[in-house]
Image: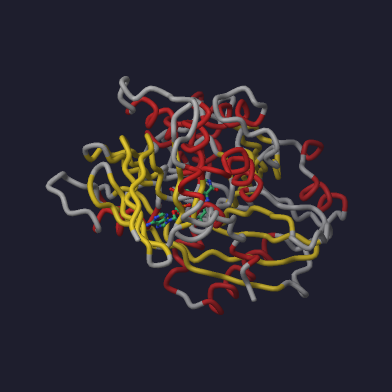
Length: 406
Ligand SMILES: Cc1cc2nc3c(=O)[nH]c(=O)nc-3n(C[C@H](O)[C@H](O)[C@H](O)COP(=O)(O)OP(=O)(O)OC[C@H]3O[C@@H](n4cnc5c(N)ncnc54)[C@H](O)[C@@H]3O)c2cc1C
């Protein structure tokens, strides 16, 4: 059986990019549907650390790179969304930590101090006195362990709970979000969907690819003379550890190498069973980049040794460790450098999106909105969602990677 339906805009992919655009364009009155091949957020978005950052970590090399300038406005933009004062309404999204911290333990190069005190960063970073420490560090001070060596900085960055973010974005538009495991790009204005042996031709004025790593296969499925963008992958070996310790940790640990990437980037996430004394510590940073050469046991051991050395006041003896590999998917640029902005390629009427960072979602929304043609007018409703609902199931929200451990 085959069906043919039409909408104004189809989005392929239900991570942060797709759900952000669905929300933004639907609230403006466009007729939009979103198709997800697996479960919402299942790839990079729920594997992300949820840090909404102002780009400072990209300035660690000692200069403000274009990347750090481009995203400097993003924390304020997200705060407006969280307060319901922006076009994407994120009220209801859980903020895990109102601040993010950077800790240069022990031997700090003077270059770091000079740089962090520079005019360029004024207002974006503050060195904290012991009285201003967050609980995680003040409890160590209280135990008089003399553990907090070096300097602790507070950044304008903050941390959100990505499952609640995705829920907030998806909930108002449930009737426009569908699951389909077989999606092909047939032309610049049509997708071919196969489900339960039936085919649906879905026509649209604009198709927006937000499938992360999956954009590559979607573009490969499209035979066209139009030039398509290339993708790059940056592999990571992330570690999660369930630890019994009441105070959560949110911080970059700067190593002696003082490179572009913090040695460790730690976020803490609530356990789904609601045990408030336990947190999932989630560890990325340089150790996750260089750890792609190690197997799971080696990587967990290495991260465990670093954490025990840095935080002697935390008991890791009953901790349970897990690690997994994941790729960041981005547009290909020279030397595997980091892209500076949310990326959108126009391939005829197809828009190919890689936000490159969760943080840059507002920037992605603005860019896509500007690229819609003026003659594509909002119609204030969705025309085909009810017909699609009869043909395709709903897409569900995926679990965080540490919840998927069996
Ligand atoms: C370990 C890690 C930590 C990170 N931490 C941060 C951070 O703290 N802060 C930050 O700003 N950024 C962070 N990032 C980057 C950020 O997570 C990504 O830039 C962002 O999530 C990408 O979102 P996306 O929607 O483009 O892709 P994804 O989240 O990968 O979503 C793509 C979606 O498309 C679906 N899909 C795949 N193929 C198809 C298809 N053919 N048709 C339909 N759907 C399809 C997938 O199932 C998935 O749901 C991190 C990334 C990683 C990997």
